Each structure stands twice: as structure tokens, then as C-alpha cells.
Image (cartoon, rainbow, N blue to C red):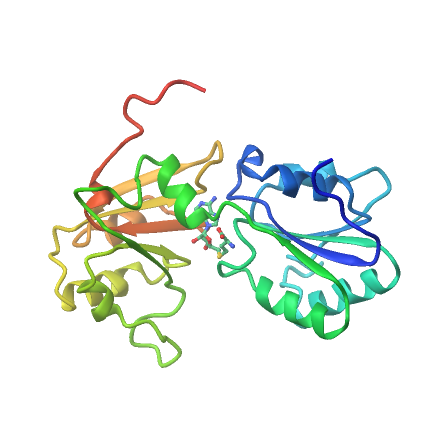
Length: 253
Ligand code: SAH
């Protein structure tokens, strides 16, 4: 065992984007030692079966009426179980610190005097485009990438993302939680100066057997996505790299 966890602690584990093979060795070892495993609906749900027999497995993504468990309640559960002397593992999809509220969970546990560790995960922001044949950087096409949340429209007062600045940045844009607002986001990027012909791709359920890739340009990607009835989780990639398809020539697996 490379990664040992102690009773009375909390371990934040990034589970990777969905394919259970994409968790880290340390992450899998942590799950295999859990007395309590708190998970939600995103990420590699098959890995829940790796928890030891007798472990308490809690789905904090949903409560019986279909709502999310409030973050305060999750924080409270982490501390309560750790105080009872258990090895608590908090499994999230992707990486806990990329739109995963892992930072808040860490702060809450630390403030309560509970020892915490983090096992970084393979974030969907990079891995989902990769598996769909899109490298987020490419020597001749993009010298960087930017990961942003698209859950609120650019015109929404709650939005703190400067879409015009992103349009001018020359970076690949990786947009999480942006499918619903894709039309207005594409408009904002074009208004910010990106050509409507800029390649854009949407990847639904990346790395899973249900993966779908929709390709287009800023001008038509929102319509194509709506026509294909794409549902979350899905990632949008905007930039010249989205015009590549490195899945051509992949060996079978
Ligand atoms: N912590 C996660 C992100 C959580 S936010 C990570 O690091 O990957 C949730 C968003 O992540 C989804 O709305 C979607 O945009 C993206 N996402 C997560 N898993 C995905 C997958 N398998 N395929 C496509 N998008 C995914």
C-alpha cells in the first residue's frame, strides 16, 4: 500500500471523469480503506464497489426527493464521521478543486480540527477533450488553455467571467457546465472578436461508453448541440484545437 489513511481523517479523492480506469492509484487505495464513502452522481460510480465490505456508502448527490444535499450538510457529515474515528473518503468526479467545492470541504474540516488530505484527480477539463481527440494545447495552434464555468449567461449579473477578454486571449477555452447557455456564450465570444468560423466541439459523457462528440463552429455549435439533445455532463471546447480529431487512427480498446 503506497497510500495509507488513518482513522479520524478525511481524504478528498478526485475520481477522474467517468471511466473507472482514470482514477489515480492513491485514489483507489483510499477508497479501498474507507469506513465511510461520500460520493455523488458525477464521475466513476463503478468505483463505489471498491469500498470495503461493511463500509458506509452515502450518496450526497441526491436525497430521496431528488434534490442535492446542501454543501453545509456534506461538510457537517465529513466532520461528524471523522470525529467518530472513521476513515472518511469524499469521492468527487474529476478533480475536487475544479468546480468541485473541495476547497470549502477542506477549510471546513481544517477549522474543525480534522486532519485532511487531498488526492488530486484527472479533471474532465483536460481528459474529456483528450479522449474525444482534442488536445487542449498544440504547438502550432494554442499556447495555453483556460477552464471556465458557463453555468450563468454572460449577461447575468452573477457572471464574473469576462467573455470578451477570453475571446481576445488566443487561448483554447474549455467551458464546463455551459451547455444550456451555449448559444449566448457563443454570441458573447463572437461579439468579443472571435470569428464565427472558430471551431467548437461539445463532448457529452466523455470517457464513458455513452460518449458523444458534436463538432461545429461558434456559428452553429449551439444549434447542433440542441438538435442532438445533448445533456449534462458535457464540455465545450472552443478554439483551433477543436478542429482537430486525434481519435482518427486510435487503436481499438
Ligand atoms: N470536478 C469536476 C468538474 C465538476 S463541474 C472535474 O474536475 O472534472 C461539472 C461539469 O464537469 C459538468 O457540467 C461538465 O461540464 C464537466 N464534466 C464532468 N465530467 C464530465 C464528463 N465525463 N463528460 C463531459 N463533461 C464532464
